[in-house]
Length: 110
Image 1 (spheres, helix red, strand yellow):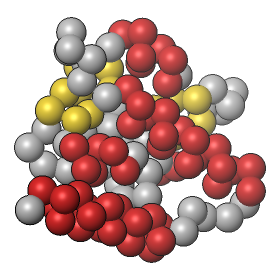
Image 2: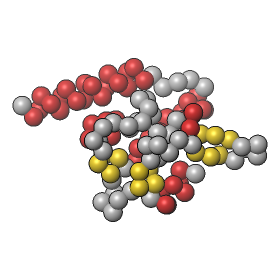
Image 3: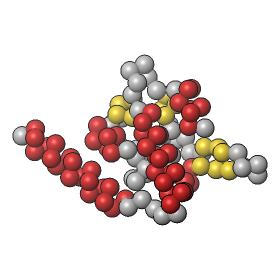
Image 4: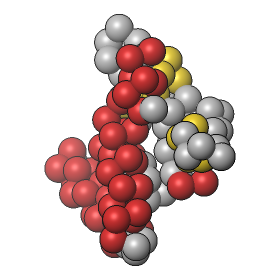
């Protein structure tokens, strides 16, 4: 499903367990395309605000605001990890890591 969206040039942007549905034949479907964007020729879409669900959004998107297909790949990896391990990703440490990186980058600009 992710591969199909990629081939069509669609970036979902909010891939999380609540947006991955199964029908009676266990066929995967994606829901909630409110954040989805069409990929541009440049290979990314610049957004003015952060979108997606914290913990499933790639850190590089939070830093740059550039929405690429890698955002969905990162979210797919987080979903797969949670499915196979039976545990949730530690979102608190992920948030602290992103904030720390933002602070380091901002101090380097001064």
